[in-house]
Amino acid sequence: SQQGEEDPQALSIQEGENATMNCSYKTSINNLQWYRQNSGRGLVHLILIRSNEREKHSGRLRVTLDTSKKSSSLLITASRAADTASYFCATAGGGAQKLVFGQGTRLTINP
Amino acid sequence: DVKVTQSSRYLVKRTGEKVFLECVQDMDHENMFWYRQDPGLGLRLIYFSYDVKMKEKGDIPEGYSVSREKKERFSLILESASTNQTSMYLCASRGQIMQYFGPGTRLTVT
Image (cartoon, rainbow over all chains, first blue to last red; front, side, top):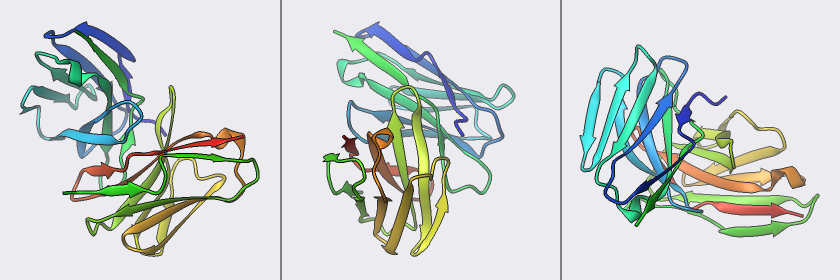
């Protein structure tokens, strides 16, 4: 069952601009994770935010979590061509070893 | 450095063939996963394993089976490949919290 819904499905911006991607989910979670996938490759973990956290930073990445709205956002600041990829949110529920992934946002950074 | 490897990047098989996809991790992780990825559908969990010889069905196990005889190796088996199993297959292992993915196998069934 797909829990995460991502918005937008595709986003195209100019290099140097900020990119924001949103994720909504349906059930309670322990944590929410964001992954990046370069074209035709495996996924790489970017950042994790726990259910008791509201905001987290890692380099040019900023993640927010609103458990009351069951939503999260990923902000990439000062985008670069190398940020072109698909971005997925994934949720982990209580005691579950598995993640439930969203459908992803395809981000294109234009030089 | 963490590493998950998959036996093939690209694979072409005929309908009805038995197909083995191999995944190996070098991190001594207990949990391993097989996903398939299709356009517009994201990643869907096929099977996962939380220990040697232990397995659990994911969301779409039909037409697949798995084998985990050793901790580092998790195999996905398509007993009789069908064209609707043409997809990208991703293997992952789980550390404390995050999952580490292999590069994927793009399987085409003709």
